[in-house]
Length: 462
Ligand SMILES: Cc1cc2nc3c(=O)[nH]c(=O)nc-3n(C[C@H](O)[C@H](O)[C@H](O)COP(=O)(O)OP(=O)(O)OC[C@H]3O[C@@H](n4cnc5c(N)ncnc54)[C@H](O)[C@@H]3O)c2cc1C
View (spheres, rainbow, N blue to C red):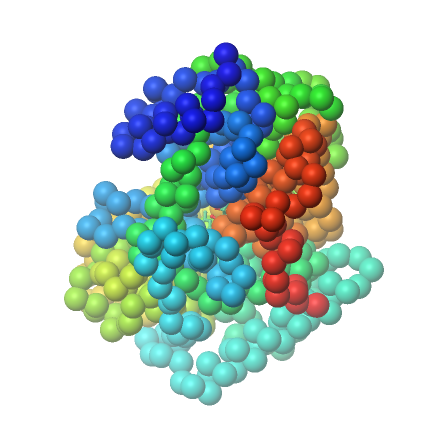
């Protein structure tokens, strides 16, 4: 049975009113042109691209909702908060910002830069300057090392004289940027990462935005792909609701899910691909969200605050999210991983201890409702964002190589925007174009849907 595109669209429009029932009710087509695995940013971007080329597509998603690492929680607090990605970056090149505006979302830039706390006081202007200078020197050292013959860890090339700012610089460039400590991070990968300037939020939530952008796509929720049979001619994707025959497949699951073996391949997925994924494992990054009514910290809307730290036991705070009383204490890297493993109670205890250290016990006493994320424990994601181990940067390109008629997408396949939502989005569009070309559905780049490669992007830092 082949379901027409119109059939898909009307079915998904009906499901949109009842997003959870959509999962159980969606009949899986037996045949499509392209099947997409995963309905995160990459999967939705890929599906939209295939639909724009007038080809039949279905997205199979293991979770009960669209979004993957972009999920907006609208029930825990009285304002929406993003449990995964929160910020879009690079407004001059990021296509998602335009899509958000066109879809009627309130796109709100956060104040630029971050505030620095030194114990119980704010850093003086001169101290903030010193910190920024330390950050520039650390970045420069990593950039220089990345031009060497052999890749190395970011930690090994940091200037040794960053003094009191070493801890904060390491936190900002490692745990906070990529979810890994600098000793686990490739200098080349870090140096090639495109600047993520400006933090731009979406009042309704980034997860809500991805769901909205996926509204017209035929998505079968709660439908994990369990086995993929592939060749150079076609692909078959097996799920508990049936088998889908397709001419090509686009896989967008995270690197940790790919290497976990949760999806079986016949023939086996090439070792080269698995090796690449295993050099791009996910770092750890979590939000500990607290309701702090009355602004006891005296911070502004979306203020970002870090501390002068001398250990990895530190955090980044996003205060008064979107003008609400919610503050998120974000933890990452090895410290964040250990903490999240200990569970919600330990995470909230740390966040209160951190606020007490920086603002006093009255501030911590004002905390009301809390909620934490634990992305490493989510079996469908297993971490936060891919970060290359030393020597692994080329793996991003390898991961994006087609395997017969199977195309891999997702943030980890993006050489410069890895770890971001717009990197995931662009990778989904690229994989869709490649799959469409492979099945003969796309000769040249369609005039009405320019690929990201034709758009102006800021060159990666050298
Ligand atoms: C806490 C946190 C904060 C972040 N902050 C930011 C930020 O501020 N800005 C930013 O740009 N980025 C941020 N990121 C990173 C960003 O969220 C990701 O880079 C991006 O969302 C990844 O999208 P993706 O489509 O590649 O993968 P995913 O979102 O992981 O999508 C993959 C999908 O595959 C599904 N899946 C898994 N197994 C199967 C299966 N067997 N069958 C079918 N489906 C399956 C999953 O459920 C998931 O929906 C953050 C991430 C985290 C965790």
